[in-house]
Length: 127
Image 1: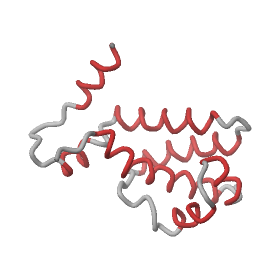
Image 2: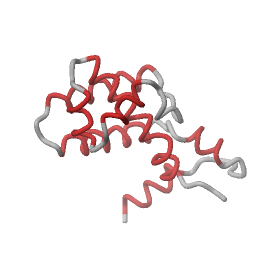
Image 3: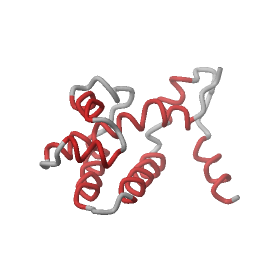
Image 4: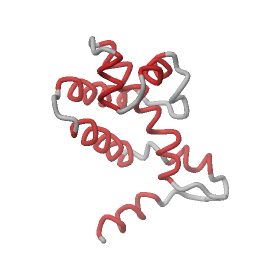
C-alpha cells in the first residue's frame, strides 16, 4: 500500500517536530507541565520526547533545527494558544518547501520513481 506524504507527516514528522520543540523549550526554562498544556499532551509524553522514546522517525538537519529553535522560543514567549498551531504549520510548510519529506516519502514508497509532491501541492493550493 502506498503511503501519502500526509501520512508520513502525521506518523513521523510531527512527533519528531514536537520532540525538537520540547527539547528547546526545556533548555530555555519552560516547565514540563506548561509544555504539556501548550501542546495538549501529557507530562509523560513530554518526558518521552526528552528521552527520545517518541519522535525518532525523522531527523532534522542543523539548519532545520535552528529554525525550529527560533519558533520554539516564539511559542514559549506567546500567551496565545493559537501560536502553537501557527508555528507548527509554518514549520511544516518551511520544511516542505525544502523537500525535507521527499527522501522519507520515497523510502516508504519504493515503487515511486520520483517525488511529485511539490507539483501536487502547488495544484492543490491553486484550487
